[in-house]
Structures are given as C-alpha cells and as structure tokens.
Length: 79
Image 1 (cartoon, one colour):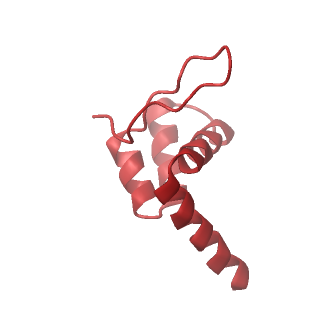
Image 2: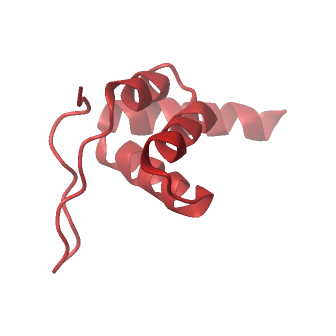
C-alpha cells in the first residue's frame, strides 16, 4: 500500500514522485531515517544516494517530519 499523502511536487518538466510505501513512511514517523533509506533502497533497487535524496525530499515536504528530524539533528550535534 501507499502512504505519505500526495505525491511530491516535481521539478519543472519532471513527473511527480510516487508516494512512499507504508513501511518507509512509518519508519520516518518513528524517527528512523537510516531505516527508511534502507527500506526504500530494497523496494526500488536504487542506489544509496538516490534513496537518501528521496527521503530528504520527503522529510522537507512534510512539516511534522521536518520538525522531528530538525530536533534529532540538533540533539546529535550536542553530543
């Protein structure tokens, strides 16, 4: 099944990206960025850089995910 709401807006001249799978979306909601990238790679067969970029775009497009990962990055920098 698909989750994650609407397809992300495409850059000019590109088709919109497909929504993330339920498993990837749930990993992101749980704050598991690395797991989300791994799941996306397994599903798509794509390379690491493409999967990471796709997950970063998904986080940037979703205000609740953006807030969650901004807080996580802030805590990691303090350690």
